[in-house]
Image 1: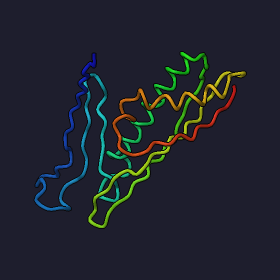
Image 2 (image 1 turned 90 degrees about the horizontal axis):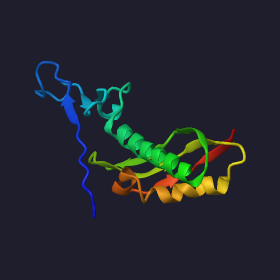
Image 3 (image 1 turned 180 degrees about the horizontal axis):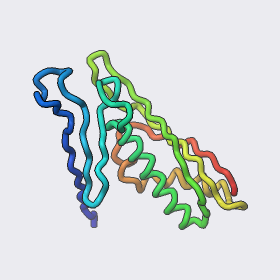
Image 4 (image 1 turned 90 degrees about the vertical axis):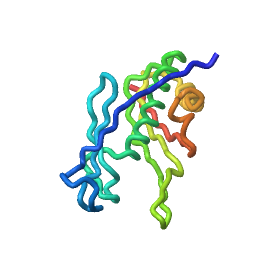
Length: 156
């Protein structure tokens, strides 16, 4: 039987400089994310759209969520497969496109994890795990663009 999972968050705009949205340039594109029991995350819009480049934007967060979900499933499936992972870092790339009218979308993502595994690990098994993750990860199963994997491994 399928189980339902509810996820909640509170999004609150923080960019009112006093006059609200009375003019396009009169407000900041900043906002906070709060999740139950979690730390508040200050965010902004994409800098090309007036956002603060020092803060994550929705596109950053989607890409980070996709990469984070992939990582967590990789660690789980590696553990089950007997692959000892000692380090994992990713610098994912999201490729987007914008139409002349300003609308945009992701056209693909490339996850580029650098995975440290115990010396003597079977790298064929370690690499094959990636192909199984899309079947499990909520985020990967929910996006409508291709997700490519370009993993590298270091034995330590």
